[in-house]
Length: 178
Image (tube, rainbow, N blue to C red; front, side):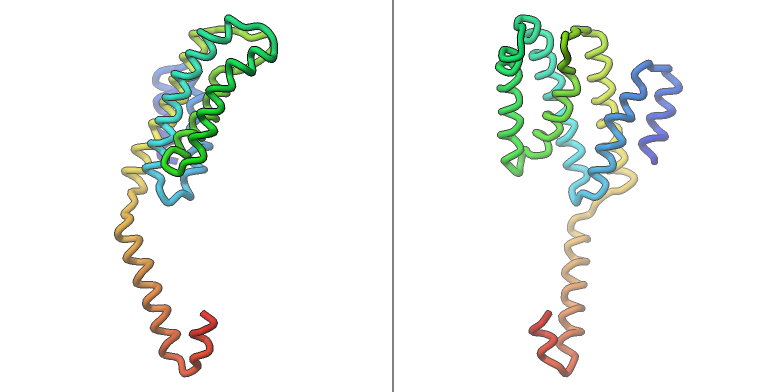
């Protein structure tokens, strides 16, 4: 809610024509990362993925794709970007970055038949996506800060209390069942 209100104020104040795209980038990712254990790190990874998708989409959509015609050549041009992104999803360290890249890469290049190459629209959409995800960073850091040490201590304390309660019972078979 904090992020939506901040973006709403920014959108109304600037009268930006692509302000709705900011919500299209921010709200689904906010909902996805809201249940994550690593909200801050994952939102930063998604931002990196969008930045990579913006660069890759610019190269693919405005340098390579205008040079080709036909479906087989289009697949040949797009496939290296997709394969690199898919390889990134197989590694835990780069999985969030690669998912952000793949989702926003295809959104940004906007494959259609016939292709339309509008650089101003591309940059407006890319900027909206970057702003949308960048607004999640302060929301996850300021409004819902995570303390992993405290969470680990709380989990260990709860496990110890649970084991102590089970051990205090006269029936030892329950301890084995647990």
